[in-house]
Every structure is written in C-alpha cells, then in structure tokens.
Image 1 (cartoon, helix red, strand yellow):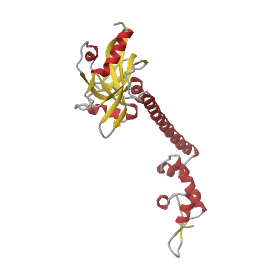
Image 2: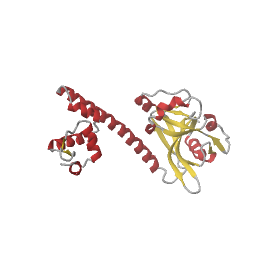
Image 3: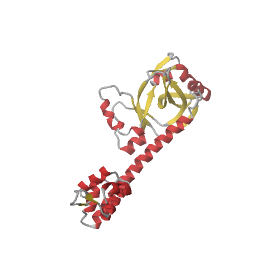
Image 4: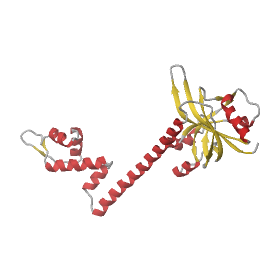
Amino acid sequence: MKINELSRISQVNPETIRMYRTKGFLRPSVNPSNGYYDYTLKDMVNLLFIRRQRGCSISLQDIDKMYHFESLRELMDDYENAIGQIDQEIAALLEKRKALLITQEHLASCVSISSDVKEIQVEDGRYDYYLLDEEHAPDIQCWMQHMEQFVVCLRIEPEMLRAKETPACIPLKTGIGTYQGLLRKCGLRIPDGAVYCPPGRFLTSIIELDQLDCIPADDIQPLKEYAKRKGLRITGESTAFLIRVNHTKEKESFVFRLRIRVEEGR
C-alpha cells in the first residue's frame, strides 16, 4: 500500500510515517517501476505498535531500544522505567489538581466581597518571600520552578497590626509563599530573607485591593473588632494570598484572603 493509504488506515500522518521510516522502524520495499515505497502488513503492525507506545508517552529513543533489546529482562526494565515516569507525572498532576481545588474553595467564599470574619486553625507554618525586586531574588528561582505550589502573597508589618492607631492606608509587601510542608516535600531550601508565619489560630476575611503597596485601614478594622469582642490578642503575623484578579474597563483589582494570627488574651 502507498503511504497515504497507510496514513488513512492507521490515523498517523504521512510526515510521521516518513520519520519512522528514516529511523528504521518501518522497512517498506521500493517499487522499482516508480520509486515509491510499498508498505506491507508488517509495516502496518509496526506502525500500530509504535503508535500505542507513543500514546503511553514512551520516547522514540526507548522505542528504538525496544526493537534492539538484548534480553527480556532488559525490556521489562525499560517498561518499568516508563511506568515510573508516568507515576511521577501522575503525582505532579495530583498536586496541580490539589492546588486548583484549594483555589476553587477560596473562590467559592469570595463570590461577593464582604467584611465577614472567620476563625480558622492552621496546622502548618508558612514561608513567604517579599524581596522579589532585590539583588538576591535569584535565590528563589528554585521556588519559581514549582509555581503551581506557590501563591502570590501580601504582608503587613507586625507593628502596624498591633498599633492602636494606624494610618488610613497601611503599607504592604508583596511576594510569593507556601507552606513549610510543601517546601520539605519538594526538597526546596528556605532562601535568606524569607518570613516565617507560624501555625495557630487565625482570623481571616476577603479583601479587594486596587493597589499592592498599601491596604486601607478599613479592611483591617473588622478583624480588629472581632478580636476585641472575642478577647483575642493579635500577634502581628499576617499573610494574604491571591485568589482572583479582576479586569474591567474601569480598573484592575486583586482579591486576597487575608489572615492575621491571634492568641487568647488581650
């Protein structure tokens, strides 16, 4: 059969078939009368074998090894390696799925922006890095390679949260961060300058900001009032992580979940 017929039956495009032929995976004969390649049932079977392996994410290099293996044990090891690679990809996809589920959960709580305050218990500490524009920012390049496990975050200086009187707009720092457990899981080091926010009891609310360099004091006030009513003391540790960006014709705004750590006692 001609290449176009083989392509139609196998659903593999002609260019790919030609590439497999040049690599020696397919061995069609040449018709002496016209110089065209004549593909046989053997070529069809080879092509379907290759298509199945490629569908399982096996590389062409590994397929070539499968054609020239020296022992069955060696061939089984190649499959074992391929299975291990897929297991790693599955684990990575599950981590991405987990990150999306977390974001979806936060989105559900901010369909409408409100000043409602909630209490949560956080079991793992966070490391946030707020020196993205400094000279040693390259120290966090390893973090950037795992960005699906990191979020954009904000920080309010502890003394600003504990102060009885605060300016109308409180300065913010912007960075990226994640939980301590994820850093350990990924084997990533903690860069110099990272800020640790310990686990514990937190007050949380949804805020929407037009700027990332300051937060209106009015956005903090509901959490302070809640803490006062409940007899809680604000420790000063805070983090706010990005869950949505709004683009409209009029403005650009950023929706964060703000968390402020509290303890019993005034």
